[in-house]
Every structure is written in structure tokens, then in C-alpha cells.
Image (cartoon, rainbow, N blue to C red):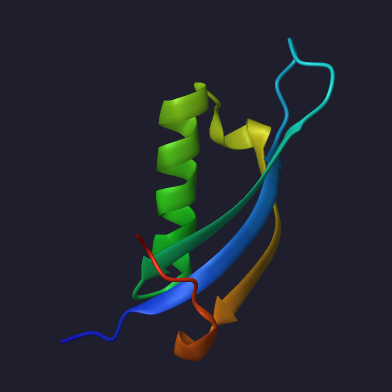
Amino acid sequence: MTETKTFKITGQITKHKLFIPIEFKKEIQAAKLEHALEKIYAEFGSRHRAKRSQITIISVEEVQKEETSPVN
């Protein structure tokens, strides 16, 4: 079984109708970095109707298990 890692992803969504980009920080659990990025593109593309070219990933870092915030 694959170990699940937690990635903290920071980025922004730039849409031509908005004057300033939408900035986001999200913690995603996935097996690989590529899977975490795919989840980000799918979620924000669905939620904000943004194309992949409008979503810019600024930074990605793997979070250790002790540093994760509790989910309520």
C-alpha cells in the first residue's frame, strides 16, 4: 500500500475578468507530487471555472506529519 504524503501548495488563479488574481494556499494529501497537482487543477478548475493555463503554482512543499493542521 502506498504511503500518503501531505503537500502544501501555494498559487494563484488569473482570470481576465478579475482585476487581481485569486491567491490560494491548500494542503492536499496524495501519494505523489503529480497527484497533488492534478487534484489542485481539478478542484480549482471546477470551483472557479478556471482553465489549467489560468492556474499558476507558486510553491509546493511536503509537510511532515507533525506539522499538519487538524481537520475538524
